[in-house]
Length: 196
DNA sequence: TGTCCGATATCCT
DNA sequence: GGATATCGGACAT
Image 1 (cartoon, rainbow, N blue to C red):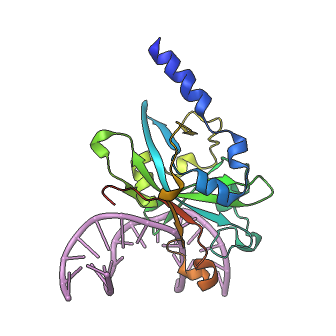
Image 2: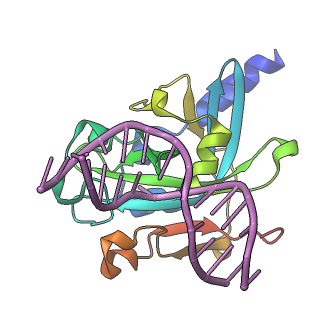
């Protein structure tokens, strides 16, 4: 029975559409401390989000939907809040994003860091490529809806990050977007006191 | 701390 | 056909 009660508790903590269908910067900020739960080959992998970045197309030159660009590859960004947007960079690194701000806005949040809950892997996966490696993220999850999926979802487990531990600054690796957009402080992260 | 570069899907020319 | 990418590991400095 313990297992069953756990199931219901987790279920009630799953983040819903109304969490994601809000302004992207707010979602990016509030995702810190939430848990990504991945069910993969009958195993559950989870981690607490420690770093995010906001991408606000079509205005944001760093966003894949800049200028209203709309191809099959970026279609997920035009989806409802909570739709998974993944893509491959540099030929080998999968990037995990969640669509935000509703269907009318092609915006998303990139997950750049998680803290694995597994003790043996208690280190920050400090980089979006590592996040995907840890959570087994790849093209198979494209378009998945985290508000209803059995493969991936998000949970609020009651972790509260003190605002004093939340930092923000420029996004990483978007020099191509030019100095104006590269300077936007749209990256958020949790400043952990131990082990950087 | 800095530089190098792998490996490939996608889009533009 | 060519350029580029929301990176990360390796190794030099």
